[in-house]
Amino acid sequence: MTFALQTNAFPSAGVIPAKYTCSGADLSPELSWNHAPASTRALVLIMDDPDAPSGTFTHWILYNLSSQEKQLPENLPKTEQVLAEALQGRNDFGRTGYGGPCPPPGRPHRYFFKLYALDTKLNLKAGASRKEVEVAMKGHILGQAELMGTFKR
Image 1 (cartoon, rainbow, N blue to C red):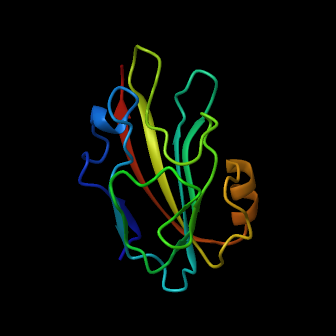
Image 2 (cartoon, rainbow, N blue to C red):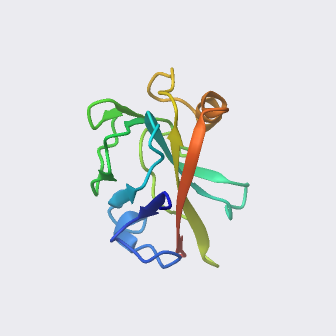
Image 3 (cartoon, rainbow, N blue to C red):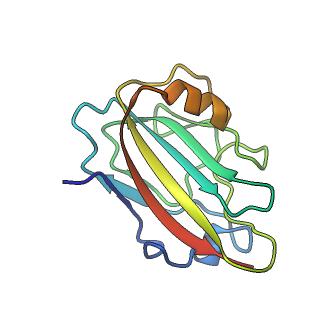
């Protein structure tokens, strides 16, 4: 069985509804997953836009999510700590938590939600940068699940 990430908010490779973007309420979508590797100790979620004009733009960083968790609710609080022990990093908007799609007007952008299964929790404080999270994850990734949606203004 394959490690998989899904949402009921939009179809895989489909359009992300406005309520999850800067054109709407900017809520984080509900996400769920299954079949994480058996030895998973923690999960990391990174959402990014590789089509941003300045290069890949990070919209969300969530780490040290318990391996017991199987889903994230819609509208996760934009606080440093969520769901008992999970921490959120600083996105490229300079804020903690989820920052929804907000591309310049024009062609659609792709938004990737990447969920990583790790063999350890990360020794990082809340508010870590993507680079700090990626450095800490190196050598600890057991598996990865991915979901992509699109949005244009």
